[in-house]
Length: 148
Image (cartoon, rainbow, N blue to C red; front, top):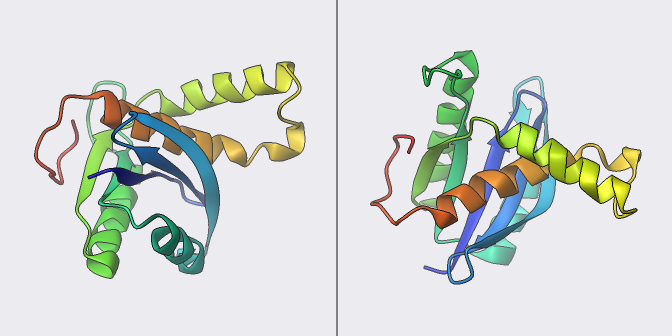
């Protein structure tokens, strides 16, 4: 296994990142819009076709005390759709604090002139990169539908 796609699932935007298991690195690559519950699958289809990932990693939003919340159902539903659509193993991983880390990275990139305010949607893709990096840096465990 060498390539994985990571997802930060939101109610309006799904951030996507690509990662390499050899280098344990990830980078933000795209966002897919969600309108009235309809996902821009053509965006994800194109990324899957381009990168041919061995694994999908989906961030599971949990409360600060680790409990499931309404957004958790959406992430689980999306994970099931990925598995059924592509036949690729899907791992759910605890995504607590990924959005804050992504916002810090975005602020830093803006401060050094690499990003502009108009790139704000990139925060969702950056959050996917954070989620994927956490998974890549964890010791390997069998693919599962439970968060780590």
